[in-house]
Image (tube, rainbow, N blue to C red; front, side):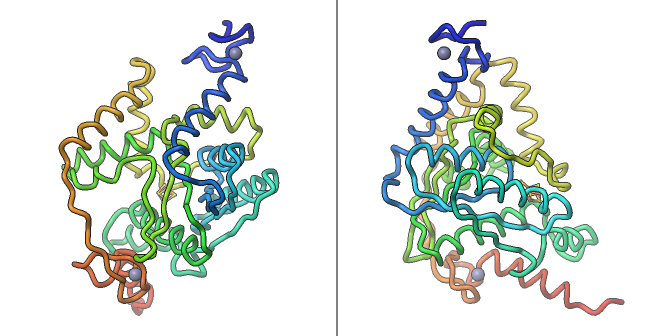
Length: 305
Ligand code: Q46
Ligand code: ZN
Ligand code: ZN
């Protein structure tokens, strides 16, 4: 099949694009997000996981002329963390940018330790919730302490749609106010601004971008992914997308419009956590992360029967 714009062979069938036109299409989608934030001359921290989405984020930001450094969070998940850390190191080498590594084992608890406590009923919650909370906390803390202006993550259209659907399922309309490609920083409350450069791109497009640019990626999955609601939802959306092209894009756009028109959210009043000094809501003197850390810490110290 021939490209819709030139004589070259198609490599992306959905939009009938050759390699060159696919890369143009991809960079335009990234530019669309970057135009919404002024990143020129700003110091950007990219959270990398060793996977295709964050690797593509780092590459696309460099291509757009941004100044980036990478942060890899070592979650301490047996095998998975070692292999993904290697991919992240290789990526930093290829891109020629600094890589920082923050080890959960040194900071508090590993995700493997937390999961054991959840499995035997010593602490409540789902492991992916604890993992996500810890990742967000450390990404922000590291960026704030090291003077970064923005945090960039590999969140893409699939993540956004899954986030929307989970909150609709849970009837948590207030959470829906968090959708969108950028979040403004609030340095008084030690919150660094966030940007999702791949917001308008799908995981499939990110995988193709990573392959075309020969980016080192770790394709293995975390051993706890089978319990991840987001991943289960994404698999269903892929079936819809196959049957109804642009399903993900159109549904996300429609829901964002509905949210903008109907969900009125009062901005939460923030204050400092009494333990770590980072942001928490005025109703909760200890932030959610410190509360989780304290519960896990207390459980680990409990004497064995
Ligand atoms: S790393 Fe962490 Fe994921 Fe593993 S424990 Fe769940 S959230 S599945 S993207
Ligand atoms: Zn072409
Ligand atoms: Zn705290």
